[in-house]
Image 1: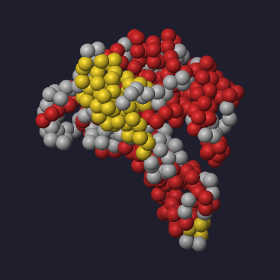
Image 2: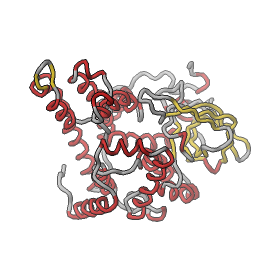
Image 3: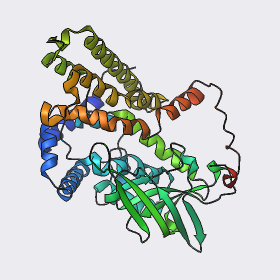
Image 4: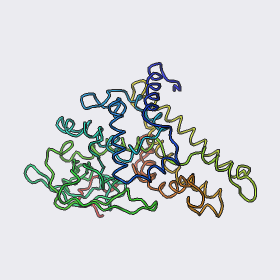
Amino acid sequence: MDFADTPEEAAFRAATVAWLDSVTTRRDASASRAAATELEFEGRKARARAFQGKRIEAGFGAITLPRAYGGRGGTPIQHVIYQQEESKYENFGVVEFFGIGLGMCIPTILHNGTDEQRSRYIPPGIRGDEIWCQLFSEPSGGSDVAAARLSAVREGSDWILNGQKVWTSGAHFSDFGIVTTRTDVTAPKHRGMTVFIVDMKSPGVEVRPIRQLTGESSFNEVFFTDVRISDANRIGAVNDGWNVALSTLMHERVGIGAGMPGLDWRKLLSMARGSTLDGMPAIDDWRVGDRIVDAWLVDFGTQLLSFRGQTALSRGEAPGPEQAVLKMLKAPLMQQYGYYAMDMFGESGMLDATSLGDDWADVETAWTFGAGIRIGGGTDEILRNIIAERVLGLPQDARPDKNLPFNEIPF
């Protein structure tokens, strides 16, 4: 495992920092929150789109995508380096609006789509001209992506879609989406799926925002009623949608495992130094110290796992199973750190940021939104199964429905 950049990587990192210094400012969490609340939705979207345009123009907006589609044609390690450096700066909500498209949908089209689909959708997608969402989860499926029941029935050169998706991030402002459908109910569930590109403004598509515990509505229910899609918008072969969906999910888990917003051990340490617990500085309480040390150990351990993956990328190799492990370890941390902070403040930990100050907003977000991170990209339990079966080689769980025709599975 290498911890130092090669000369080429160091030069790319220096160029990245120089460019970021020229177009944005170092991140200030409280200032970022204040700026975000001052802008209405359309203003935030326009600001994110403008910054993504600057990133593309400078060669940082789609580093690993081919030049033919507007990317840089760079290496995965260059992408990692850029993400490391940009995380220290204000990026004007690029992830909120374009993260799913750039991180999941566009790579799926690149690796599984037709030449026509790549030419049509990748350039405007990476410029930020079009926004994407991912329509996989369904009310009866949970984390079982292969349990998709939204039907797609062939009618000439078109397909007619009927059914429902849920927990779709950004569906209310997206232009296009990647959707999993059931095209053969007589085949086993993994062999009767097909994936399509859907225009989110198509007749019959209805988006209903879901009110979250945080007070936001970033997730949605999406209903399809006789939605007509051309076969030209099919990604991959008919009934081979499981393999297409797998490629999307791997990109999703990489993105979620790469970094978690909000609290970390440094902020917990700062809070402990500035608060009292049972009449003495919280930092002097051994229980608080134990939790901060635990937070540091997890952070350091996951950082080493990240370095291992980065070393593989730097050598031109494909990373191993580290990303699944990272996602499983890091996803619960938001809730865990939120609990640490609230417990540290005793009874006052039940109050909100209007009483405890702007910095407390990170604690609120960690506690209320953390559960969603543990579900998105595969639940903790699903990831444990994947690691146990595919990494450690342990016996598989019993799956009595695996080879049953889909229409014989008792839901």
